[in-house]
Figure (cartoon, rainbow, N blue to C red):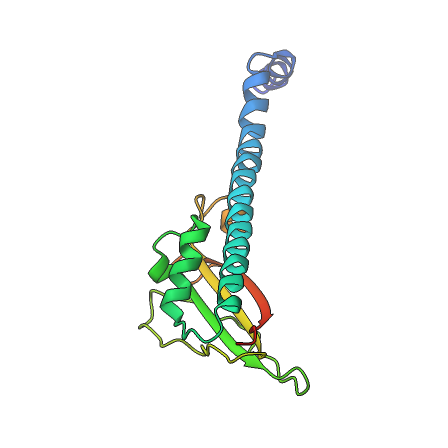
Length: 178
């Protein structure tokens, strides 16, 4: 019996049946992860660019409409309308707009104000419309659910307790004089 083992091992090593299947089984998960990560990265980039574009277009409208007392929900709805990639806008996007004195810079909180569906709804942190010739900073935080949330890039994105990742966009502008 012991003499048969080396013979069986050498016969097993000489056989090449199923070599391609073994290579396929080892390599295909890596290729699938790369493919899924590529798709996820493409969608994240599209969402980010559309959010930035929509915020910039909305800021232009806000800047030129000095004197109009625009509220958070009105501006948020306009950003959502222009973006096209924000699902459930009322529960996914939050804006923050503050005025700054360029000669006495205080900065803003480095952590953007985002929506978290797990927690109770929080009031908007800071949102002021601003007056003419006033420097304004606006920041948007959008939450989204990754398509492949547990695999590849989707698994590596920082997510909240609800499993949603965040994207941010910011802009600065000066209110036009009346």
